[in-house]
Image (cartoon, rainbow, N blue to C red; front, side, top):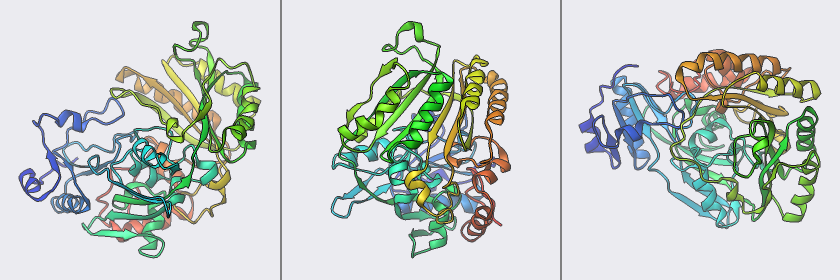
Length: 455
């Protein structure tokens, strides 16, 4: 990375927000991202107060040729939210949200987390679907697509994105939607942070006054795994599920004799009334005697429980889409999980379809509308020197699961190079994104991401 030549004093005198530099008391906290093992030291971290501040930082970085990173929640698996020797645009102080319950829309700044947005909207019985983790920033998850607890009922996050305020590489602040700069609006719905710094989103909200959700822990057998996935695909669209096949952690509500044994940690969310939700969940409870059943009527924001603030895991992970999970696939999953000594290892399977699949594939830059299942395999570890071994394990695991759907979800993509990014944007999607990139960021200023170079 090129060391920043941007003047800290100049930025401090021109921004409404803050500039944090090496030596400042909160510098180390400000440069820490969610993923562990990343120790980068930016030349400065700008915390803008508004889009005008963002434009000033972007302009300064471009004029000085500095590496530029953009951080919303800081959950990039490769630490893209922090640049060694470069400039960081840290959006976390931009957290304003304006909700209009009459039109069921919200303008939200991109420093908000998914949990913060969901709590604010949930107070009015409304919701926009994000992911499954409260601390994820709405900026990154939205730009990559957004697969979460409402994906089958209401689609991806980008399917509820109505407009965006974005700062482009030339420092211009644009308001984009399907009528104003429609090419850019198409690209940012799935194309990631390649085209500018999104500073505000306008979202559609849905009425979700009640839900039935929580964790259902089942013993993992091939039959239970295939049954869980089949039930997920056959369920009403109000129900979205996540099946985490993994060794049972030593949780206090799980009997000690089950700790370390293979389980399905199911996360289930039915967006509707309690009676209908209980009927939809009955097939899952019938798969096996639950080891723990924490599924109950809740408010939708309760699907985003508090997280450990000091948790910074190191992980090797791969993402893919799959066509099916039959008995043979389930056995393969269990065999590979048993073969690793990672203290936490998982195969996570999400049934898709529903509202997500009804949007035309070329309507947005997310090109996987017909994909049936999204699977992620991961090994979480504590020692940095163990990474190479676990990377080899997840590579082998993923290769054994690969089926005819060769796509990848960009928000879960790790370091698979250009081939991985091309898999996230197959066919004509790549060429179309490259053309938009050439128009709005011809010098590839926004390259600290899963990068799409200009055509």
